[in-house]
Image 1 (cartoon, rainbow, N blue to C red):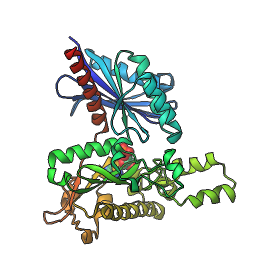
Image 2 (image 1 turned 120 degrees about the horizontal axis):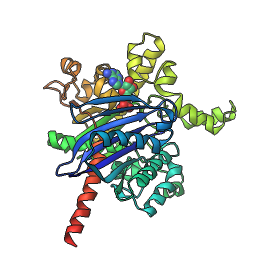
Image 3 (image 1 turned 30 degrees about the vertical axis):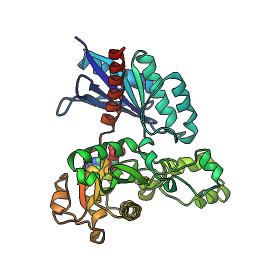
Image 4 (image 1 turned 90 degrees about the horizontal axis):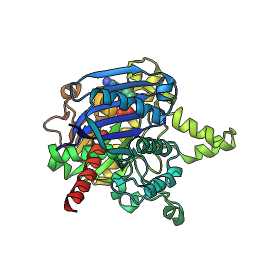
Length: 401
Ligand code: AMP
């Protein structure tokens, strides 16, 4: 007997997240994992099902020299543990879907060309995503390949929130506020609809705080505004990214300091944010444990920008009914949540410190006008569900033929 499964692939610059989900009936997680440091000192981590086995392995360079190698090594382990799995679909996280894609699509050869054509919009991410697609197509030529876009959830932005104040021709060329982390926001929106439908119908700000960080204002579960813009550099400061920065700084660095654009890009994406400010680390756990004034200032800046964006997004939504924290920092850091919510009674937030310390799902007091929640996000499940939906639609067509 074989077990039909969908694989999920989320390919970053030097990492590859993957999952395997049963597609028999309701979608169910069989395994999720990560290969990090691809091409350098790669390491594989996998966990099998909720509460199941966890495996961590250091890999040799040749086992994960590139994304295809990393995927093959990860799949070999999955096949060993789940030998009856038959891969029917592969779902891919694709950072950029451009203005046209508000939903997942099946990846055909022409669609792959469309994805390649969008690479200039996300040159640091899209090529890796495409490498993941090519690797999966080579390994599973008969499986359905599905693209799930990080930008798609934000295509409901009103135009006023989609524009920059540039001459109009640039909007038409695609210079717009796309917004990212859409798979995470999609998941949170779905969870809110399930656990708190009244809040889902209302005005919600979701703070996805991880190594990449952004916030999204939702009305009725749909994105109205987000902190990321044309690229995933805008908005909140992140592990190594600046977040919002005056474009005049770029002119200064190029004209006065003689930096090349590549050097500025490297500075903004890889050496700034929490790492740049602290001079110590991009990792919030390290900063929370450190006792240097620079680490404290990096945290201060992170919290300040989140609070500022919270106010801005509440204004864009015309008020606030709920705040949801997710991402590695949002789900785990009591300190950051407490500091973001401190003194926010003016907007209706009253934090329950004991619940916050316990990492409860609801961390506001019963009397707080705004409900504050912690909901672990699950981008892999959103991708798997999309792949499953395409499979079911295909099966439906096959059955009808
Ligand atoms: P992500 O990119 O979503 O995996 O999130 C990574 C970030 O979450 C890193 O900055 C981690 O330091 C942070 N993080 C994970 N666990 C904790 C924790 N218990 N306390 C504070 N930060 C955490």
